Image (cartoon, helix red, strand yellow):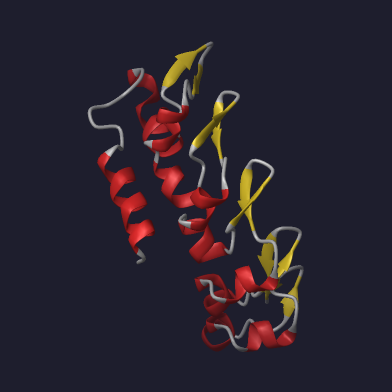
Length: 152
């Protein structure tokens, strides 16, 4: 883990809903999604701090309030997220983290395990027989042919 990733990780761990923030009925939504406050029967994020303290900030890069929810807001949060390492979502695309090239996909755990090694529509997908044949899923489950972006 690089120094900047480690710093972001430690910062996020140190700020996760301790003590619990927000309304009691929103505790789980607060911890996971940053949606800590109840209004009209729904839970919602009141500010960026709610989002930054959520698990999905680390996992998906959803660290900024956008309307009533948390969404990705910059490249840095995308690059240090689990979504980047696992799914290739290393770049800001709209209000989420997505892949922008095959290079984003090639080093991911899902490329190795599921053959999702090429970018298509900002997601990493299995697009060639070679993607699947090199993947763990081919060896373990005989899923060696790309079908609609997955190895089957």
